[in-house]
Image (cartoon, rainbow, N blue to C red):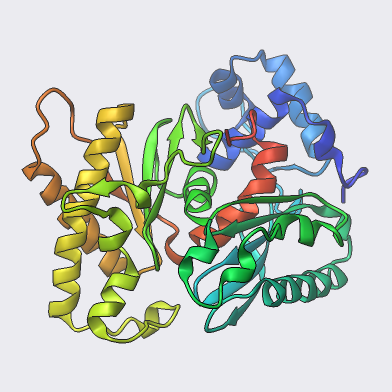
Length: 368
């Protein structure tokens, strides 16, 4: 247990850099940390000793039998800090407690026909109170992150109460830790950046296919949202035919073709193959256009495709997007590489929890 349960408030940038490196690369010995950070071996020894003492790192078993001195890999301590994530969706709200390694420890959800502010606040307050009461040391919670679509009132009837409603401020009234709020597609991108299992460069775009398609962009290893929260809003990107990306590459579009809603889990994804194939083909053309446009503007080498869809559907979308990308004219620029994301339906709730994690534990906050 930490001597000071909120010692993260005092972390130096070098300490955050060490934690970030281990989070992305897995357990590392001190020599590898020194090489990656450019810090001296003595500095790494002092910094990691402090991180171990304060409960953020665990020392593994000594590795022997290799050339040179025995090494001790350092890994993140799961209980080093905890984070709450709240994800608001079209038909489902989720609340999760996530540990320092990105593992979901507690998960609650509620399905509805449409979300109202009071329903979401009531769900969040009750759920958070239950979680806090279950923890032996609730002071280990660093904060609450909220992932929500912006402009909820544009969803139509029954959503007018969201206009001017400050969800983060309302939740913060009752909480002893800070609340962070961001667009749900941006948080999906943040989750891939911080918790993802795919090796990615410092610059990439992220396309997330959910009820409405959205996106995010990472530059120099940081999620970029822009001063007016428009950066990476790839779902709103215009595409040929006078439409936007979200008009085509969204699960809602597939549901319109089916004439029914799909449940919020992979087991309920029962779609006739011909209808899914037609939707994938049309979506891929739009996704390829968005990917190439992002590259032309920002020199993005990699575009990640993920979503609240089954793995086979995600794989088919990525394959079809690669093929569509090859058919687009690209004189003067290099086409980006299309890769699959690694978090699927968990991306937005993990991304919500990543907001307080990034604020306190990433070297530069990881969000700008």
